[in-house]
Image (tube, rainbow, N blue to C red; front, side, top):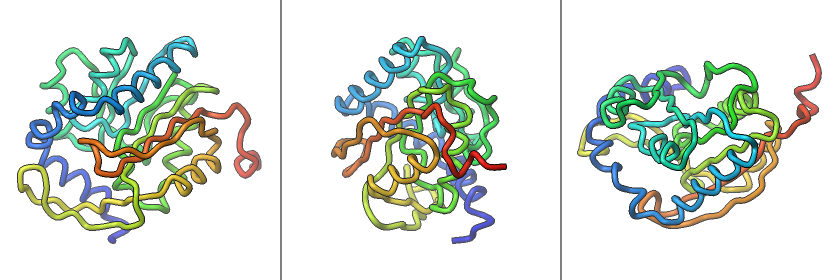
Length: 223
């Protein structure tokens, strides 16, 4: 993997497939009752915490953002790909979608009541995950919920074609729950629930619901 070029490869790939991606994923939540239940639980946790803004990081064409808004949350989307953001704004007029990267999250400290990364960590290399989770913790309120979904497994494969046969150049990383949970613990999150399921979203999908700890992790407390 080109350590310097994976982010640009990801952006370019999703710019290329944006319209086809929207067509192929638009109705997936209608076929995935377990995922809808998890998103509803996340929304309940946000409301229990008093509500507030929720970031859907790696939002793609905005279908999860829109669903969160339908659940009554003040949700907006962020994505690396200008093409994805353009389609999201067309698909969901009136909702907010910003261009940005989870590797350098341009949100104020402790400004988010909740955060979702729905199958959007799958292209992040292992050595970048800690920094990404650090950004997630930084922007969440103390006690704010974090919802993650990812492909479960032990391999990384280069994806060269997808979503209507268009060319892509992205690595898809499959991970085990214990590894993701360890990363979350190191970043200052407490994992409350996790499960594996099979659905239209993923043949083997992992779901983790965590919460931002109030205390700063020990390794982050030193200058």
